[in-house]
Amino acid sequence: MVDNHTVMVDGFCAECGCREIDGHSCFGQFEFPLAWEHNDPALYALHFWLVTCYMIQHPSNYTEEGYAQMIRIFVDAYDNAWDTPHILKVNRERVKLIGKISNPTPSAHRSRKSRKWSMTINDIYLGGEENAIEGLLRWKDTIRRELPTFSEQD
Ligand SMILES: [Zn+2]
Image 1 (tube, rainbow, N blue to C red):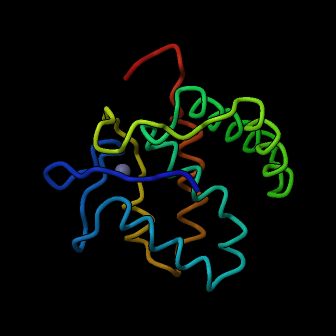
Image 2 (image 1 turned 180 degrees about the vertical axis):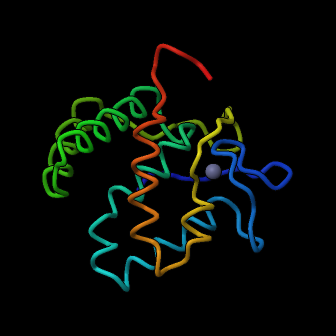
């Protein structure tokens, strides 16, 4: 997995805008569904979507080309309802073509731009383990609708 540090400013994530809850940072909340996956094969089957939803909301972890690639695989997989083995196969092939996808700039020196999303990791965390699948499926739908386009900023 790529380096996935997030930075909280005054209790909110500098990128996805989620709030700190129960003392957990944005990334700290992300670790919950990552743990729940290990108890639930049906949730684990959605691992690609969990990680990709989260990472799409944290672009500073990627090079520009790496981020664009992640958006493309998300859209292709979503719109064509690819199954996970196919997603992973295509992703491997494409990543090979573009080389480095994680941002080489150390976390502390990255610029982070905040953006509003209608769902963030807050919703998954607050929904709890029993609602994780349903929450993740909704998260993926809302992100598909709110995906950044590369011609506009903000
Ligand atoms: Zn965040």
